[in-house]
Length: 327
Image: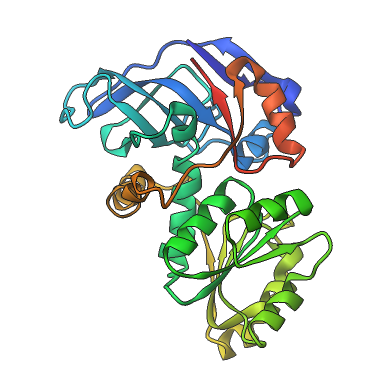
């Protein structure tokens, strides 16, 4: 089969489409013929040698995909039969023509979506759900600050937040992305290139602050986040694009009874991923068929255009997900 590998860390030119052996399903595993996969920021970091695959996982890039069940391993229950359209969150291996995964990790593709749309769901929505509803304990009537809200996880998070009945403060860079967020009906959109999100939140909440912060940035925003997190607020860290070392006022954290919570998805155990996947299927997947949630796909490239796809993601032009069509 064809798959994308990186033999030496570096730029998009290091991405190589090569032939590798077809994986064979083991006990309670299924093989999926991949039709589409989606890009994530973690792929860029892995390509540069900054985010290696977890122990035991393939070094083939790709954290989510959608396709068709093509082979059942021994001990499978038959819940996902041959030919079933499925999507799945991965520790790696999505940039390929075939993947082997535990049967219990698979999710059925909602009938209304094509493979390219389905591939944009697993990583973005499962990460957003864990950050907002599990770690952040976001409730109806509360408020949340979502950074990079026009990106993959950000656009999923704002949809989940609005479905939960929360008030959304969303940041994005530039007029085009901000206008797109307003077209979705986001309550307060902040252009981080020209506005202070702290000033806007302080003014809009009469100094109270927000109940939850979804933070992709880390150190560069540490002081700003401390200034706009409400009493008993939850600061959920899912990325460190702005650095990992920051000074934190622990006295303020204690006084305001706030929580700082770290979240990572890729290195979790299979058992944890099965549990969070099942919760998503029960509680959130039906919202896609109801039209309350939808994957946002910005642009689709073919698998052999993977270098162009990475260049496009690094340009920060995309609104929503970037997808690779595999077949």
